[in-house]
Image (cartoon, rainbow, N blue to C red; front, side, top):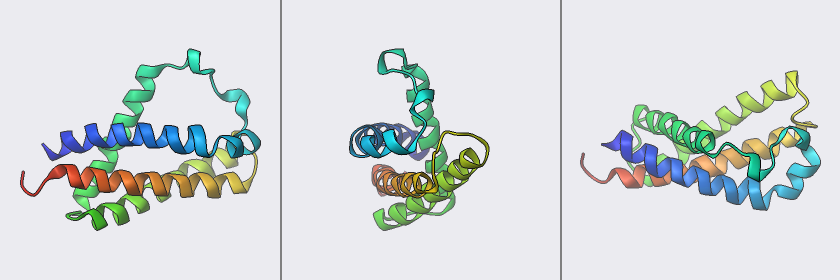
Length: 134
């Protein structure tokens, strides 16, 4: 049950936090530091794939939290933050090295920190949805 709850609630949290952080708070930064030509217009987006992506990411984070034996919201924050930071650094450094998606190293830093914050919060939400017993 923990896995299912973590995946669902984590996926919802990641979706809305991602919209808030990248879609609103970092929009101007993104316009200046990412290659915006690669992104689809909102009306062209494949929403089922975006939703599924968030659920799979939440599943991966939930597994990471379980394997890390997270029990408290502080564990969720610490493990979630580390998970997001490592994930983003891996992805962003790979993109920067082989594509023109990220236009400069500051995009790597900001995106990695954004992921760390979002996955830290999502980690808290996931652990809190587990409840005391299963």
